[in-house]
Amino acid sequence: EVQLLESGGGLVQPGGSLRLSCAASGFTFSNYAINWVRQAPGKGLEWVSAISSSGFSTYYADSVKGRFTVSRDNSKNTLFLQMNNLRAEDTALYYCAKEEEEFQLLLISDYWGQGTLVTVSS
Amino acid sequence: QSVLTQPPSASGTPGQRVTISCSGSSSNVGSNTVSWYLQLPGTAPKLLIYSNNQRPSGVPDRFSGSKSGTSASLAISGLHSEDEADYYCAAWDDSLNGVFGGGTKLTVL
Image 1 (cartoon, chains in turn green, purple):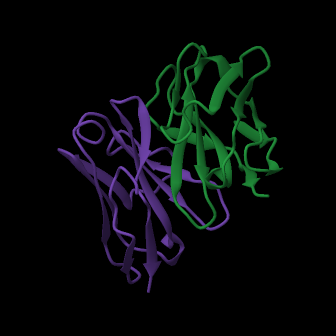
Image 2 (cartoon, chains in turn red, orange; image 1 turned 135 degrees about the vertical axis):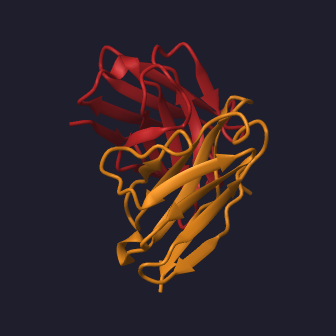
């Protein structure tokens, strides 16, 4: 059974940092690109970042470019999102979402985690 | 403001057919496939349609998708009360970004 489990969320002050993790199981992790998608309270979905199956290619929304870094450890089936210089507008539920097909990146995500909540507030 | 444009709301009565539109541009909907997601309150999104018109296993054939040019549509026929949810379209953009629509809240009257 495919499972994605995010962790690392919490309350942080503006300008602070957090590192989110996404532990994956039930599929060949190293064959799939993964997306990070967030949802602010009461708002819609926003794509944040993505990483290729190998980890060599990374992609970011303009809103987080230069502040967030996505990475993965294929030996540990884990995805990370390092978030620096956090702002109030980064407050959201952060989901990791697996691509549907191996070695593709088309924002077709067939499995999602339950999300981890990040709150940026003083 | 979302890159893909969806109506904020839609409604229908049980048994009715409803459609939700998704408008993009030549760099996203026009050149890449469109996916649709359903989100029930308090839950993670669920893939409903991918590659414009393909249904994952387990998704009823009441749900169908189509695309023409820079616009896509999700159709739900034989509306059920449990279809009441938020619906999002999504696509990859040639500028190497993922993009979502703003979401459509479907109400079953």
